[in-house]
Amino acid sequence: MQYKSQAVAMPYFIAAIGLFVGQIIFGLIMGMQYVVGDFLFPEIPFNVARMVHTNLLIVWLLFGFMGAAYYMVPEEAETELYSPKLALILFWVFLVAGAATILGYLLVPYATLAEMTGNDILATMGREFLEQPLITKIGIVVVALAFLFNITMTTLKGRKTAISMVLLLGLWGLAIFFLFSFYNPTNLVRDKFYWWWVVHLWVEGVWELILGALLAFVLIKVTGVDREVIEKWLYVIITLALVTGIIGTGHHYYWIGTPEYWQWWGSIFSALEPLPFFAMTVFAFNMVNRRRREHPNKAAVLWALGTGVMAFLGAGVWGFLHTLAPVNYYTHGSQITAAHGHMAFYGAYVMVVLTIISYAMPILRGRAANSNKSQVLEMWSFWLMTIAMVFITLFLTAAGILQVWLQRVSDTPMSFMMAQDQVSLFYWMREWAGVMFFVGLLVYVISFFVKGETQPSKA
Image (cartoon, rainbow, N blue to C red; front, side, top):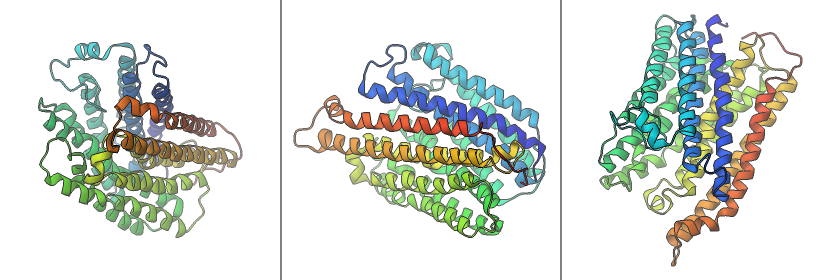
């Protein structure tokens, strides 16, 4: 059954895709700056392009999570959203604040932006991923709390399911751990220690709960497998994710001045972190194989299966490659880290947001699935983006291995910049793979505008 208030998810999904396009454009600009150092300089310096690229990633994924919650929670709770009007007000507040922040990065020198936005009152700026001005951070907290109030009240007045509870736990965790972005101690060791409480405990902790809930919801809808079966799998996955992810934070503590026992704790529990992602892959394929019906939205099924596989490869396999302390000693902060980061974010979070958008958008537009022509284009976009991301990861991995050898292992180690010159071929290859990814993303956007025979919505 569809609920009228689920329609508030649509602007969130549209904004997410629009910001995703912007993120990739700035990724391509950065890729060119790796090989042509003065590309678009001084208009867009590298540090600004990097801030915009990473901040857009976070913001568009948050838009995707919020849209997914507004779509899923009414259906899971079997009741209308507590306040659709509040959801739409928050959408515009978040969009305007996000756009203003990005324009601030692009148009105002960062030090001036810090002076203008109250950083002298409470210094929170200047840290990777958390570069947002103080007023933006406060805005994010306000939006997050109002959003959580809305979906929590919806859940409380309706049916409580395992999927909605896991989703709520993940979203509340996301908001709570973001509060550590306001804590910026002068001691650099303590600063990095708690900085990871936002960055790591988001992507390798509470975000995994959101990922599991979204994937479970879509698989119930497209396979018809009993809810009890899917919920049991979900409990196993989130238990593994939390146990390994929380203690696995220690793999970031190896070389920042913390006690050496973190090398053992970090190595052991990080080595177990691929398990929840492997379980997720098995879960997705198992549910599709046991399906009781053929859902007309083949593209959404493809995205769901791809999420499991790519999350396991990016977060699991590539994470494991350099997570053990004796290996990380050589690879820390190299392009191997970038390779892992790109495939892990794409596989785990980008793909699951695209999965829920692929499933929900046709229903919000009054049909069970997009036309066959549209779905063929969408599947082309899936393969173009996924294959491009595999190549980006492989090229960055090759660059990282060569960088480690030339800069850190060789008997005559090179300086950082000399080593970068030696690996520039891989950066060129990465840039061309990035262009291929961008083409895939454009095909994805175009697929929503392709007309053809459609079926009326039965969901």
